[in-house]
Amino acid sequence: MKTLKDAGIGSTVKVVKLHGEGAVKRRIMDMGITKNVDVYIRKVAPLGDPMEVTVRGYELSLRKADAEMIEIM
Image 1 (cartoon, rainbow, N blue to C red):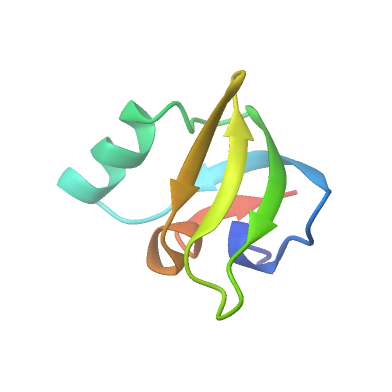
Image 2: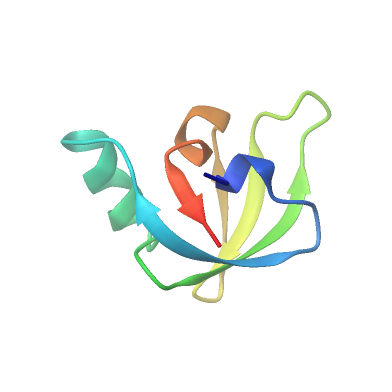
């Protein structure tokens, strides 16, 4: 299983599935990250946390723990 955390800088990936449950999953979905959406990896902080992505035309910063819950293709 490849997650958003594993994606390289400058790549565009498609979300396959969201893991996690309850409020955490709801928060990720509220940010616009849902199944079949394209996510562009803009940059990653030197220690890997957080990472900046573009989703649905806007920039978003994600923590490493949240990125591990997003399965990609």
